[in-house]
Picture 1: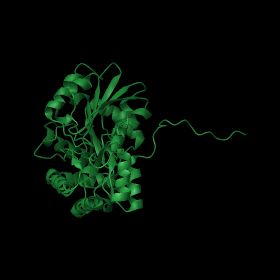
Picture 2 (picture 1 turned 60 degrees about the horizontal axis):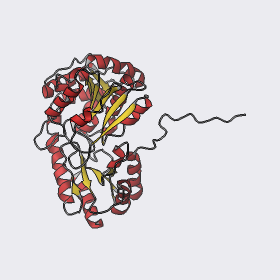
Picture 3 (picture 1 turned 60 degrees about the vertical axis):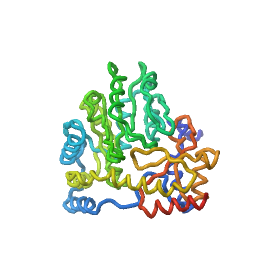
Picture 4 (picture 1 turned 180 degrees about the horizontal axis):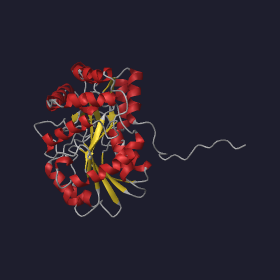
Length: 385
């Protein structure tokens, strides 16, 4: 009798995500975890109260597949207020189980075997696997320190007959780079006359610093028709474990998105949606987030000034990159492990965000933490060095 043979892997070269690896290493060595991108402080008690209110009232069954109408309407009004365009909440907004699900659903709905997808690297680690598992081909465009700016003419040389999608991330994780309006104009110019889709990961839309304003594809009239944008309530409201987000964009793309969404998760957490609808109706819940996180960025940077780490400009997100070249010549993966084991502070090596493993001797710290956590991390690093 023949024994059962393991099936051929669709992702043979992928293992456990670096975020899980470093978080587990941090737990093992009791290190301060500045690796994985989650806050160590709780969300607003009022938001939890609103969710409980709807649970207690019996809003505990399936929500409509696209999301509860109340939440979609509030999101449409928010997008209109921020970006000048009001999407149709019935046909252009879908509530999702977090932004990662939205990104995977969009790629699954729109990418077929043989399609090429341009990734701007360093790129968040969920993009490439979603492309590959759907038979697409990843075409990387690499950015580098210290500014991680896009040369749009150079990027344009990658666009060919098989190009189906370009994925942008703005504000950009892990670099902290923030796109300006002229860059969206440049992207439009490159794509004019093509059928290339823009998938825009905008989960850090409210975390833009130094007086700048987030530029969304939803507010760019020439890009809107070819774009889907994804967002995260978890990143915005400090509750990443809720896994709540949404996608917004042109009706023709959203129609395809929902075809996959309905057979993927169908619908997402009902009482959370109603609670978020009430909470989101007050813009003060997100208006002050840039100042809130900029203060944390500057607080952590001040504690790192006494170290040989060289900071890389951070214009957005809740991550800060540092070059450690003045400390060690070992690989960033080895250095991240050394920091966790020997320094007692966990971080993420930036080479893992490149398909080719490009190593610029740069590591990423998450500063979405309490001041005492950031202070303790800085003190541990100073002592270790």
